Length: 59
Image (cartoon, rainbow, N blue to C red):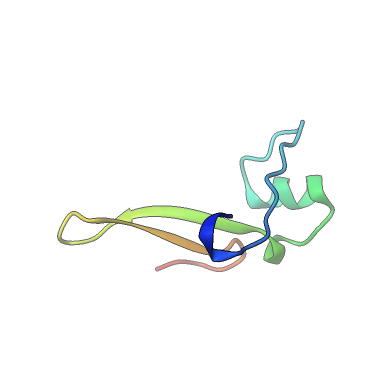
């Protein structure tokens, strides 16, 4: 993935994966192995991206 030398693969699934539970089931893995991305806006109206484990709550 780009200039950071991160090895990654995008996987397109043929089943519905709107939730981390559905994605984990489709991939035969646990939800702790799934990452979620959240685009948030701070008090200064600046957007920022949070990537977190799907089994953890972002506050």
